[in-house]
Length: 141
Image 1 (spheres, rainbow, N blue to C red):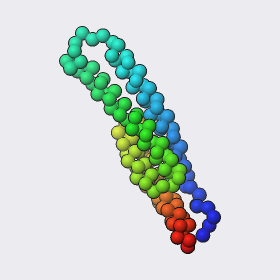
Image 2: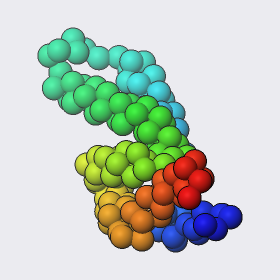
Image 3: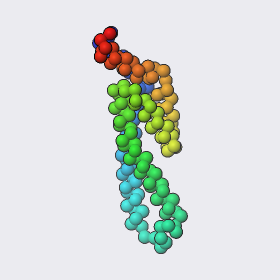
Image 4: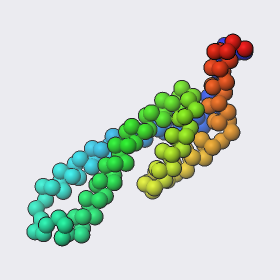
C-alpha cells in the first residue's frame, strides 16, 4: 500500500478547471438575466403581456436562462469539488451537468469534451482508485 493516492489524470484536472470557469459563467448569466428583466419591465408596452407574443417569448427565454444559471451555480462547483476530492458520485453528476450543457448550444464544445473525458477509462479508474485506497486504509490491508 502506498502512502498517497494515485495522481489525478489530466482530464480529471481539466474537468475541475472547466467546472470552475463554468461557475463564473453561471454567475455572469444570473447578472445578465437580472439586467434584462429590469430592462424588460421598464420598457412601456401598449399591449398586455399575454397578448404580445414577442414579450412572451422574451419572458420564456429569461426564465429558462435564469433556471440554467441558478442550477449551474449550484451544480458546477459541487461537481468540481467532488471531482477534485475524487468522489465517485461526482462523475455521475458531472455527466448529467455536461449533458444538459449541450442543450445551451454555446457550451456545446465544452459539454462534449466533459462527457467524453468523464467516460475515459483513466478518469473512471482514478475515481474508483480513491475508493479502493480509502477502503484499504479503513480495512487495513
